[in-house]
Image 1 (cartoon, rainbow, N blue to C red):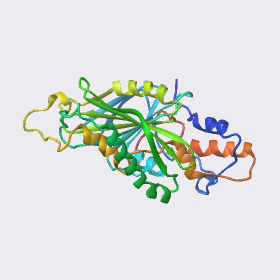
Image 2: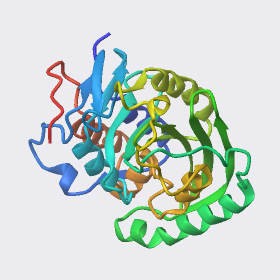
Image 3: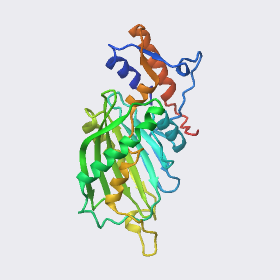
Image 4: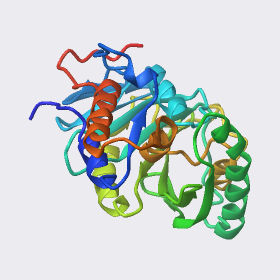
Length: 296
């Protein structure tokens, strides 16, 4: 299978067949053909954070480098941390999830508090932090977000040294999004991975996402088990990693947030709107050519 245009244009046109859309002037530039982002298609290995880690892509997956990941997230109305190291997405017709990778060189995170995680208190903190981030989202044309509940309470796997939790949020337009969070602990810090998808699809996308994580690996010398006395130790533990989700940039908008920024309801023909949507997303995602270019 070769990479092909994203299935999202068609899916959006079907899902919003009862709605009428128009593109902004930026998306309507005559003669515009060059994709805005250069996706690196699989199969193959891609580096995360330079010499820190890598992930293997399958043939039906594509990767966006750190620079372009920041650019894409900001277009969606998300605050970025500057620690983004890449994004993975599927190229299949049936899937629409995103996996955003961020690396924090915090030092070795001890897991002594693995049995002391207070889920209720942490959820309250994340709700407050997400509300604080809504001014930024609205200033950048994205809807506000409101955390509803855990989609999966925080839990830690002492064998893999992975910390996992999930958040269900709703935007001002009534759309829902799930952010499924994984922290992959390493010797010098941790890789924060956020899976973003529609709540109705999250159970399926978590299966595909887990296979991506199985293909993730720290480089030799960077794994959690290779910590040695004298190495830097982080000033916080597992509870603080979840609490960091209270930051304004924590809960990320996905594709629906992007649509909300670039489209608006107007009185035009549905067929014309569908064609406009398709042109816009082809420019955004490109055709995933085999050149494997992923630079800015």
